[in-house]
Length: 307
Image 1: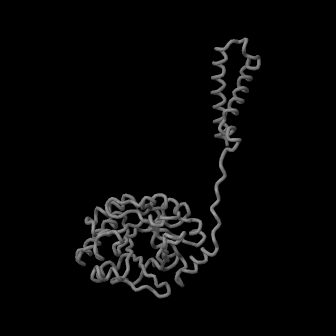
Image 2: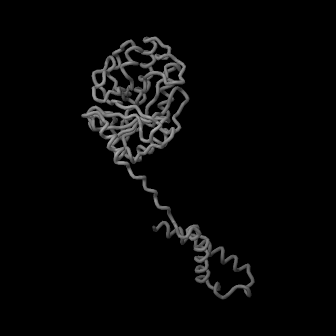
Image 3: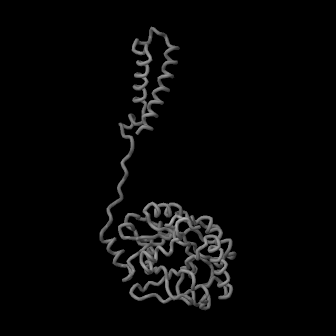
């Protein structure tokens, strides 16, 4: 408030000074005695300020009222919370540009449904950046969710270090105590990627590519990234390689009522993607739960100050 008063006072003084210079150039016979003194000129300047003020022109409306979010449908919240696998109450979502195909992310719904964390796709290959990444990441942080970035691995595009560096340049990893470890998405090529199920690589070649990719991310962040995959892709494409079992696992398995089968090398999982999203429907995202509840979620967050 005091800053506003000082600003108005300064503007009045400026207008008063300009008015005085204008009066000295005018014919005294034309000017009323009303402006003959400094006090009267200042009063006139205040009047000019009020008439020309944007607030006056707008009918006195200084600030627009914030628009409240639409009401949260209770049935939708109930469907999200009751849909989580039994024994895994801490849920979250992972999103990409596909989630903006027809609708915007309804963050107030996710907060009401207790979605504690969000993974947002950041990059793919060596040039693609999710155009919604920055906005979604900021919105999730604004909603006080734990937030992480993920990268869609493209072994068919070659150089794993180059792809990892592209991801690291955009992923916004900070030691704020609320940023999740990076996540690497390794699965079948989506429609439009002209490659075989294993990206036209032999198991030996694919294992080498994955090692180089995750090693580069770990060297930069000082934390092992989480690997998102499923048993039906991992075991055939890597020939059941068990050497990645020390990395946190985000397992994709849509049984929900039965514990997922884990790929070779893993004995447990950190996240379980139990439901795929449908971008044709509002608030229908890929949904995940944390193994170990809030303590399990905290284990995926480097401590504050850690980089």
